[in-house]
Length: 288
DNA sequence: AGCCAGGACAAGT
DNA sequence: ACTTGTCATGGC
Image (tube, rainbow, N blue to C red; front, top):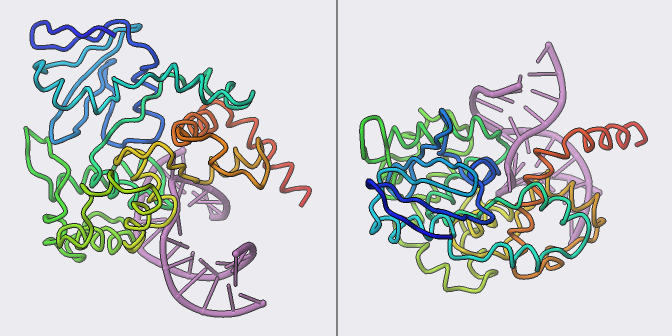
């Protein structure tokens, strides 16, 4: 990949394993939307727009200093995904999935935002998750532009109180969100310390929060805190690994990048293997 | 109209 | 240690 700066745009040429559609639509983030071929969203306290043509990606209105300070890490651009894919290609199943999903990059999102986003995500659907997060930002986030809001800090959500979150219509998740905000704002949990901990210890820390179980913790660890071995098991991934690898599957099968394998499987299951799966699921139900 | 959604939790075996 | 009902809301 080569990086250029031109008219205050960053231009990334010869990108490998970087596809904006796959990266933004694979279910890891909720604040980017595509319009006229351009993705726009808010991350790391900034609004950015970017588009892709072939293996060229343009990040608009971004100085080289900002690219280096934020977006190089955010888009995980220094990681060799081709090597990771080779390492993960243990079997025909994962190879088939990767054929369709090799453009995914695991975004290094803000840990606090990721934790909240996946607290909201539980037993919920993606369109509504996006709506709730958008209204949370509108309600409590700092205005960083015209009708553009940063993700609110833990302090802001904490001082809003659980009652202050009812406008979100996020149901029983409001008290979970508030508990997370309270524990982080009051320093009971220090998210900045978690990346230095072993995976299981970091996970236990997150699970002290009400409403944070195995899956939500793994999402925060994988998408926001840099733990690539975290393997979120939602209904799709559970079904996939059960069908592909059997009931005794363990994430350790995929090794240190299990989380990335999980994302390939998740996106493949949802986007490409849907019909085949619902057919199997139906016949299984009938037989049972 | 009714099932489902990137689950967690408590209560019951 | 496993299973089951419940939780609040709206997308499709």
